[in-house]
Image (tube, rainbow, N blue to C red; front, side):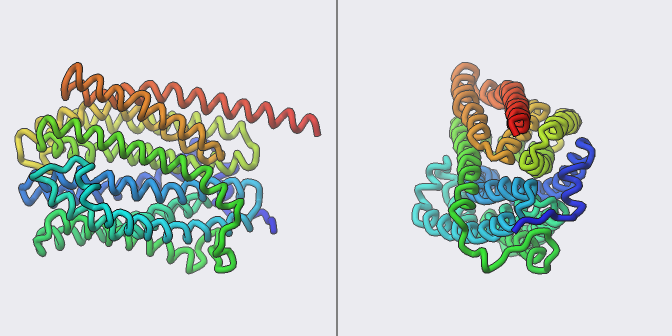
Amino acid sequence: MRETPDDKRIYVLSQERPARAVVRLGVPLIAGMLIMVLYNLVDTYFIGLLRDDYQLAAVNLAYPVMMVCIAISNMVGTGSSSYIARCLGSNDMESANHTVTSGFVLTVLNGAVVTLVGMAFLPVIVGGLGAQENTFAYTEQYVRVLLLGSVCTMGNYTFGQLLRSEGSVTYSVVGMVLGTVANIALDPLFILVLGMGCRGAAIATILGNAAGMAASVAFYALGKTLLRPSLSYLLPTRRILREIFWVGVPATLETLLTSAAFVVNNNLAVSYGELTVAAMGVAQKILSLGNYVYQGFAAGVQPIMGYNYGARNYRRMLEVLRAGVLVVSGTELCIMAACGIFAPQLVAIFSDSGEVIQTGARVLRTLMCILPFVGAVSMSRMSFQAMGKPQYAFGITLVRQLVLYVPLLLLLNSAFGFGGMIWAQPITELVMMVASLWLLARTIRTEEVVGQGSNDDV
């Protein structure tokens, strides 16, 4: 059954002025994501109050496990969202509703598998993260809780993506905000009052994700959404599974590659001392303020690009791309300036160690140079995913992480030590911005020419 949805959310995707559409879908996501920054910053802040830099380092070492959970949730969320947006663009509501239901089912199954496999290999995972004598026990405590609550983490991220695919950005933000508020409220209770340290931080994080997931499910259950999960769609079709995994698996590999590069980075940093790892962790979490800004704009652009690709409106896609790059780059330049000016003061919020503050400020001032470039790279990747062309999105990540970043990381570390190592990412993002924008614009123009040729034949 096919029907044309009559909804103002569709108007934003199809007809709203490009710059305004980018802002309308991106800004609420950014607001929610900036609040989500508090997930990591609040954990770091309260653990910092313990004055134990080894626990601070352990939280940073454990972060790739969270990234793996997000990577797997992205497999379902990104793959489903891409297909949903294209179905809406072509007015295929039945397939869109069926795909939402499949997203719910796959998320629960994936969460159960991650918990079982992760717990079976827990000591091996902790050792592989780079934990050493002073940080091993703390890292294991944190990772154990993350694995046990992986369904909540995956559900929070995946269900939010499903809501955004239909233009229900506000509902997805509500889940983000509720989850973060719960985390903020529970952190001091578990970390300080109950004296659970970094284990308490992990418990608060999982419970926050559970609250966010519950909010997203509630919107679907109450009929507030454009699409409706249904028991009649409980078994996904072969076509839906193919579409989800065709886009979703490369998206997962992208995040896993990023996580692997993060592990390489941490293992190199450990050679300069465990307090250096703590300093880098603080700097990276502060920088996540800027990361969530570009991720919010990119996530806002994704359903617009997917919808218009499904509707074969290639001119609007190019207009949205131009508007998105201008908006995100301008915003990130402002954040870069703030990070540069107030770097020592920002790091000092989380640690009173002179070494951590000095190193953290140095790292922050270097890494902030990625901000004007990385937004365009992320927007290009998400646009390719929205178009159902994950091979290009994965290609960008493959070149970015394995061809440029990791080799540069090793080369600059060998040649210039820690000071050279931290410049690997800014150099990588500059090169990738130019390459990814060129590839995306060229692909859209090629699709437009092919589409015009098909219409002429008809």
